[in-house]
Length: 249
Ligand code: PXP
Image 1 (tube, rainbow, N blue to C red):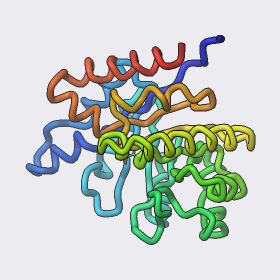
Image 2 (image 1 turned 60 degrees about the horizontal axis):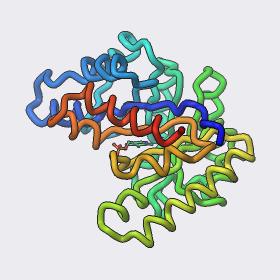
Image 3 (image 1 turned 135 degrees about the vertical axis):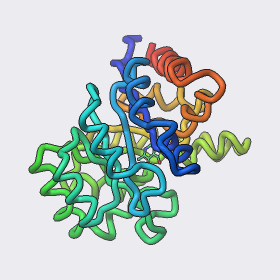
């Protein structure tokens, strides 16, 4: 069988900021983590500026735009405030994520179908500014079709339910979630959408997802930052990269 194309790894550095904010000082510095991630082979850096600024700050986004050599994937809620920040910085990519319970489907992705009109108007200026727009959704055909209709270029499939089922030992549920993501990757790809996957991925759960032929990018954060405590960030990322590459061959 032909080896699959290289899968991009986006490293999410939010939880470096979580640890920094626990003490209110300057360390550990998310920008330093981002540069280590770049050197370890990250193809992009992902950061979520939450409305309550619980981890990443406005200054972090500004700093990342200045120091990064790889693209920034700016995760944000669909609010006017976040749209203005994105339009000011014009990051390579924006990923629209739910923050409030009512914006979420039961599986945890963004409820696009119910808010199609508003979201179509919301993402249009971001696309016009040259940002690649991604929508974080569950593996649900209705949501994927809606993401396509509103003009998103990318969908990121929410892998949280799959990862939770694996780590809780609910293997039938895990396999069902994995199969749904696999089928919906093909469905989205056939519509012309680029497919990314993220949330909750670990060394144990990454390979079946990395083997999806249509997947172009995985975004991984919490596990890598946790693993960095034991291995160091560079080694933690290199091991994830190795597992991803192995799954593609
Ligand atoms: N992708 C998206 C859209 C996210 O919102 C997040 C983090 O919340 C991630 C990926 C990374 O998830 P994790 O930190 O669980 O690896």
